[in-house]
Image (cartoon, one colour):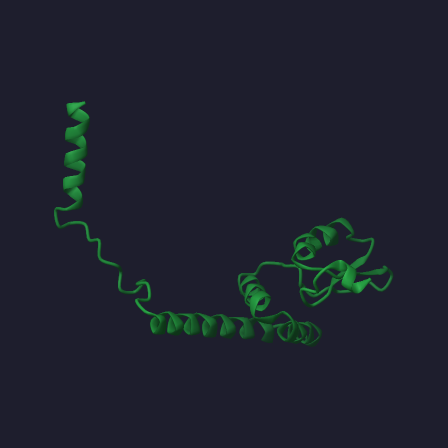
Amino acid sequence: MRLLLLCLVVGLTGLFDGQTSFAADSTQAEPTNADEAAAQKAREEAELNARYQEWVATLSPERQAWEQTLQGELGSFYLPIHMREKVAGRSNAWDFVEDDPSLPCILLIGDSVSRAYTQTVRAELTGKANVHRAPANCGPTATGV
């Protein structure tokens, strides 16, 4: 027990010997007030928007038109999520669907739950149907029925 206590004391002493700093890294510091937080959020949003617009510029005209539709429909909650996924190179429920004219089309209409299963449905119906998703969170599926 004494040995354990001695090791603990020696270990803690190393924390306070001047070699370890508990000061926040100034480049990664948390905002200290609402104005700083708002400025940080604005910088992050501007950076995300710039990266997203660079990505959109690389797309075909059809895909750019789809992204413009999403920009108008996804709103302030889902659009930033979509933008972060796209600049990270990740697929999501609102991906552009290149139709195979020989297959039937399915339109999924629903809320965030349908957003979660859209990609699974697309994968399961690959080669059987073109699976589209409404470019918004549409609320309950009954809304479209």
